Image 1 (tube, rainbow, N blue to C red):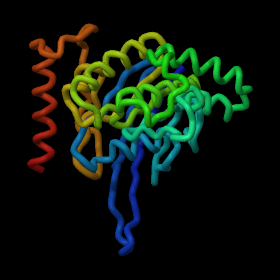
Image 2: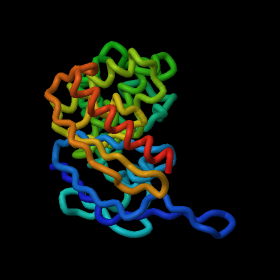
Image 3: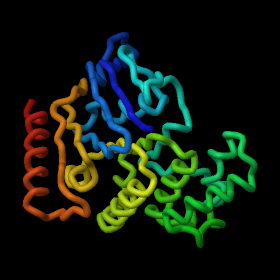
Image 4: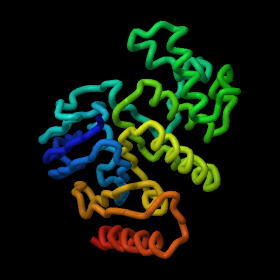
Amino acid sequence: MGRVKVNSVSRTFKKEDGLSTGALDNVSLEIQDGEFLCFIGPSGCGKTTLLRIMAGLDSPTSGNLTLDGVAIKGTDPKRGMVFQEYSLFPWRTVIDNIAFGPQMQGIQKKDARRMAEKYLELVGLEQFKNSYPYELSGGMRQRVAIARALANEPKVLLMDEPFGALDAQTRNSLQNELLEIWEKKHVTILFVTHSVDEAVFLADRVVVMTSRPGKIKKIVKVGLPRPRDRTGAEANALRNSMLKLLAEERKG
């Protein structure tokens, strides 16, 4: 299971001058097991803050979150995180990067490496298992980061603009690969993006956030059959409706 509930979550940060700034304001949301959910919104609206709270890397000022009915407090292998930066250990080979999580859970090195090989195959990088991160392209490094997160066999995969720094061709390719992995692993994916096109192509539902402090402005059900046509009339209509919602926030 990978069912996440966000219950009235707010997050306020204290500034050096003693004043406070709100990042999130009373966000409530229920994510179903195996759902692919995307978050979009203006810059600084709290999308990444919400993801970090879900990962246990930050805590809400008020409200709470649960995974399958259990309170989310601190980090846990059941919640894997993929950042925009590749965040790989440069001194470890590809296979040892992926095996790191299982080893930290007490799995013997040879067994962890065997698990890592399975996930390397899943992302199509078996032939690069003994390479170092600096020897790989940006797209390949991000595939390693995804494999490393999956090697912990999480219930929920949290992805913070994982393809934002990539060129368009590589980005489109990795979107397709991610969907294939999602369908094979049946993992819940929560995905932050600034790209409306990416959200429409990937998501079951899209959560549109307001300007800071972030609230849920609207939840859009995509409902398009997969594989999706990026240029189809229905996709264009959804994209235009979400762009209008975002434009309203810029005017505000």
